[in-house]
Image (tube, rainbow, N blue to C red):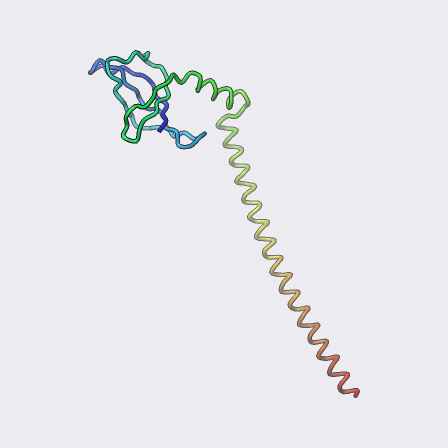
Length: 144
């Protein structure tokens, strides 16, 4: 699983460690990690303190790969922030979509109601037609 992490120094052990900040849930969906979660890197690590990195962890929590997150962060800025996509914009779009969904639901309910009314009217007309046919047939029999 892919994580965004920041390099810290564990003062007690005098070793660098990663503080996990966010976890990738889907291709463009990340979840913040609210609790402090750290992974020791070992004394041989040469990563700079405060550096943001992308770290791939195995299902058992072992580090599979680490890479500098600078290019990834710049790509996020380029993709989302330079085109005006902000959290406020996304919230507005989500509200608009919800409003449309509610309107479509109401329209669908109205169409279903109208369809039922038309079906009831069609049945009434058929019943009247049948009544008129019976009446007409009854008049013809009386005239014969």
